[in-house]
Amino acid sequence: MDRQKIMDYIEGNYGTAPEYLWQKYPNYVVFRHVGGKKKWFAAVMEIPAEKLGLKDRGTVDIVDLKCDPLLITSLIDRKGIFPGYHMNKAHWITVLLQENGVPFERVRDLIDMSYQLTK
Image (cartoon, one colour):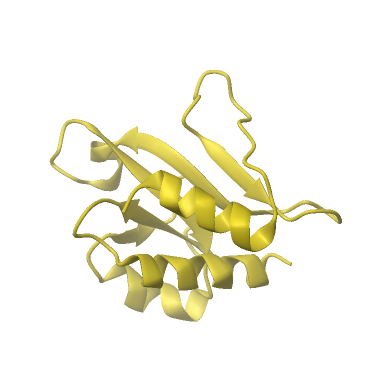
């Protein structure tokens, strides 16, 4: 699964455009609610793999999503899901976007949950 598939899902399903907020990090994309307080519900980033404790020396694509705190412990035990990177680890998770990783259907459900939790 690649970052573009995730971004296309978010744009198509929620009608929100990606925001590139940091010139220093051109591969960091934030998605916010339209109208209201414009809270973030997803952030797609390219980060060093070592930041997630992975042995790979390259970079990886991730998506940060808000999650029900009661689910976080059970989710981060699964392959490809980590405590939130650069977010409150009690309320956010990081999903590794790679082939043979977390299935798109699972990521889609987690995006939907994040959207609802940040409404």
